[in-house]
Length: 512
Image 1 (cartoon, one colour):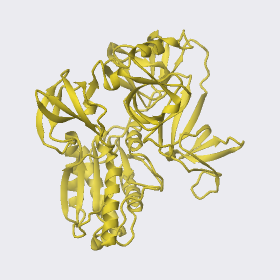
Image 2: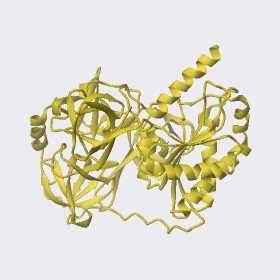
Image 3: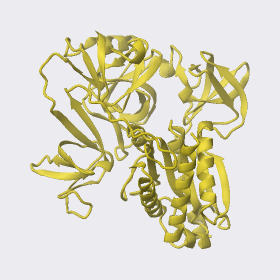
């Protein structure tokens, strides 16, 4: 019974890790939100697996009763239901009565959870504004440019909507004669007006450069494709002038994602450790060598850090270089296709552990490496969210796929259940647009491995929910079943499973 209790506890912890859920909060109650989607489904519970109970129209205002993770419980005409918060926007009063926060320091870490040990997923510069969601002890939950995270209250000041306008107009951009704007963050919202509460009309990506039409305080109006234009917040980019004689040299830095990251003497995982860095530490880059950055050490000299354990940002005064076009898609191959492979778990996140002691994180990486080889042989470009036994946050995994221009996202896992008799593989999807992709992968696996096919099933996993790509999360079998664990840990099974996923990908893209 003691072993069974441990297994149940491990599975509950695994579920929380995958879904990345946050506790329900009642701070949103009594406020209204506006539907920001052509139609918005109302569901019986907080998740995509709950039944539909109605629909809302774009622009419709609804009262918020409660909040659970990314879902809002609302009341309409006396009836209650749940809607996806990411398809709404705050009403004029907004959550927290229109409150925003302003960073009082440079390089304020935005963390994935309210703890200094959690991963740094972004930064605020001095004067940057963010929407305030709630407080939790000494931490504040914020949204900035569509990204949710936590900052320590020691380094922020809360302002209301009127003060917000004062802050926004208090500092003029230092480059007043600039005519180009280069984005320095992964994604930056473009808004209809120079105000964070204004409607979002699109987004721009890191390293993209746009002509400037107008500068208003800390806001810049940029020209977009098709004679369109919009406003972006100037602190998330670099202002420059094409007419000036700027050099094409750039200053590049990398920031550490997790605590205890190894900075090594040589560019290899077998090399000695020069020092250990913590989340948010920033190093200046000398050059990049394959998958490693040579960086300056604070004590002098240089050492190496792997690209898969850092975020990189480059502030360049040169105009944007064109990204090479992908090779033309060739039917019957994967040439011209970029696949993001996500080996589940890693580092201190072991995933589930089998009855014979198998760690899920090890099997997912072995399977991903084998699958990557097959995809490359078929002409695909492969992006791995991790290449070694290291922890990568769930949001960063989806971010990596987006940044690298992937055409599809495949997350690999192995399952567990308190009922040790359960066996088989399952292919999960979250959004309806991902279902056909999940079906193709499931069909490919079904024809290659001799396990029970549990089919395609909807599930509310963050790496699928926060993903705009065709994306699946595959549970390749149950490590909690002693007999199935022996099968799953064999090289023969990994060979057959990777072949099945490859065939599913090929069939899916051939049908497009």
